[in-house]
Amino acid sequence: MDRVHLACLCGGGPDRTRIEARSSTPARPPSKASVLALAVICGAGSALLAGPAWARQGADSPKAPAKPAGAPSPEATAAREEAERWTKDDFMKSAGGMREVMKSFAGKWKFKFFAGDAIAPRPYLLAGQESDVHPPEETSREVGRVLEALYARFYEEYGKPCGIKPLEVPVPVWIFMDKGAYEKAHKETPGFAPLSSEHVGGYYRGAAFGITVGEGEDADVRSSGFLYLWNSEDLEGVAIHEGTHQLMGFNGKSQAFRAGQSPWFQEGIAEYWAGYEKSYDVETKKYRFEIGRLSRGLVKQRWTHARNAFQSDDPDQQFTLRGLLEFGYGDFAAAQAAAYTEKPDPKASLKVGLVYSQGWALCHFLNQALQAKYRPGFLKYVREELDGTGGAESFAKCFGLKSEEDWERMEEEWKTYVVQDLRKQVRALERR
Ligand SMILES: [Zn+2]
Image (tube, rainbow, N blue to C red; front, side):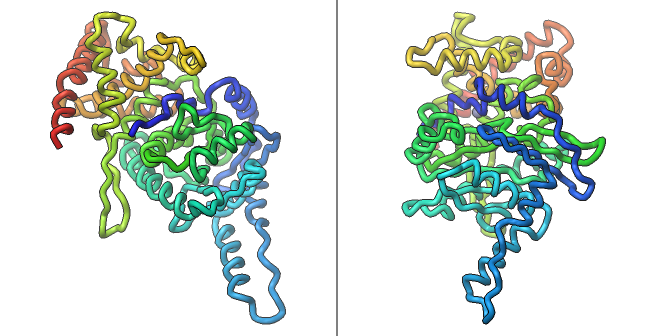
């Protein structure tokens, strides 16, 4: 059961640059009346909706059905209650506004929207594709419970330590009936569904719109976007990986976009989180996901690759610690472009694969190796990446690397951990 999101472009490519350039247009100052204001730039469209307008749009739409002269029918009552539910507080008004934007963005493709209910826990806004085969309620519920667990763990892990506040804005997710239905949407409306499902099991399209959080001088415009998922065998794993990108995106600083963010970290942490074990808590009636585990999929896809790289005598077969940290988004995009063609360049394919494998291995090492001595430094580094100040220099600061010897020592510890310690964990997993 391979997870196929290797080409996790996460909104990369030339299209992204264009959208980012537009996203960096100064947003209108948020209204005082609104705690949060949202500016949406539809990727392919031209609509720029400022927050208060968006919230108003949510408040006005959909129209509550007109009251009949006699007693209202149960359907009319249910429709009115549903309409009222979407306007009952700031979050639901924003979700209502976002829903209208998403409807126009999706065009001819029909979705059913869920927010603030048993299917879509806050802050998610789920759009499940209408279908007779897989009811949107079912697929959305499945995605909702994974994202709910991810969100809870993400904030447990990084909330206080990294100063991340809970999101009060709707976090939008498209859920397609299946891969075929997604591909059809991609072929017919690439502006709406920009990536082919050929190399990916789902993706995060960053920088699709901007959100403004806070007011006045504290207002911070962030670049955020949509998650695209479809039914597959590994829907949960993909939802966790891509959903981690989305939470990083929504919590990142405004003008950072890709500058000051590192491919090894962004992909590594998403893979680190995607190694999960799921259990059901009968008391809360919710699923709980233990992250950072070695799953069989990760062993096959990431650990084996990272170990082989470290054991190779050929320096081209692996990144050094510093080399991995200095491999930026420009390099990554170029390698991806050369790797995902009809005639892939083997060196580029290797580099892309190593960003995932060695990135995952580095996150695993920094969180768990040597009695977790690097974990406090890792939490500091998460903040740097969110602030767009990631990179080798801030890495050295967070982990107290002052000399070349310090760098070499950490690199040796990292390699030893992957080749020896993780091997023991892999053996234990294989015996289970
Ligand atoms: Zn990814």
